[in-house]
Image 1 (cartoon, one colour):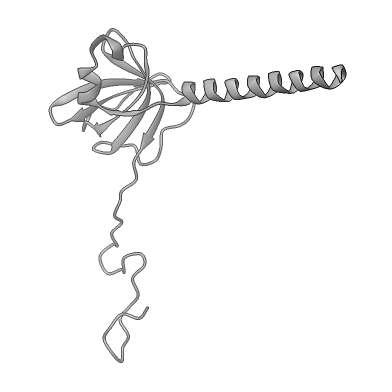
Image 2 (image 1 turned 135 degrees about the vertical axis):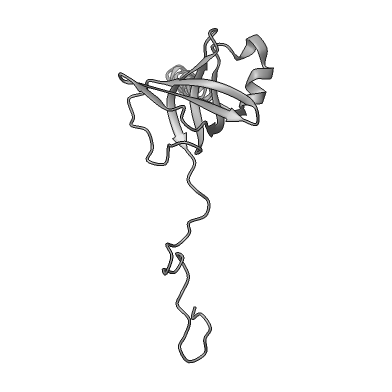
Length: 148
């Protein structure tokens, strides 16, 4: 019986350790999306905390300096300078006016140091003139209505 008690205690310790590691890992990877205004309202709590912040890329603000990309996110009249030095290439949809999410930390100098950038895709794709929009069928010659 003593042998089974030690084995059961070992199992409990292993399971407890796994649960603790999973919980700690989830808390570390858990970041909330904040707007630029919300980030500015956090005050000193914003500095150094891992955060995801979103806004629109200000037109003409994208600058490449060596391996770093700098740009400005805008929400209404509030602006946030962002410096991205991540190893992943920027998304194809990242451009002036695009909605973007930056994942990183705000420094005391007011620059958001991003490790990852995501650009939101357009929610609506439009066809070129003379072409049908995606998912649309040409009208039936006999009825004049689009076929499904």
